[in-house]
Length: 102
Image (cartoon, rainbow, N blue to C red):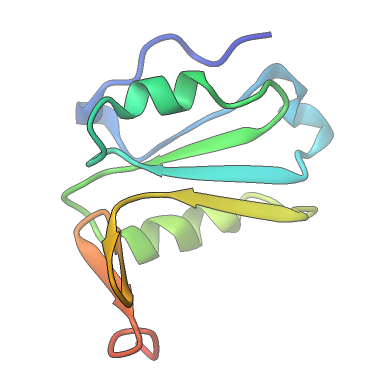
């Protein structure tokens, strides 16, 4: 079982799903497309785990909210992105103590 082989940044945000997602995956990996060679990260996710790729020029918090609304039985959420001390970079937004209440 493999993930979708081609992800175009022009069509992001997208959710790439494995064939077992029909059984409602319990894990979701969110990957920021701003990562260098993010496609390799997508390709390395184990089969059966759902993957959402964040568009780097759109609000990542909003994109994550939309993605999470598609799943009802998640037990784990993994976010792969860049950050700085006290701040997580998600798409075009940043999550920190100063922005968390929005």
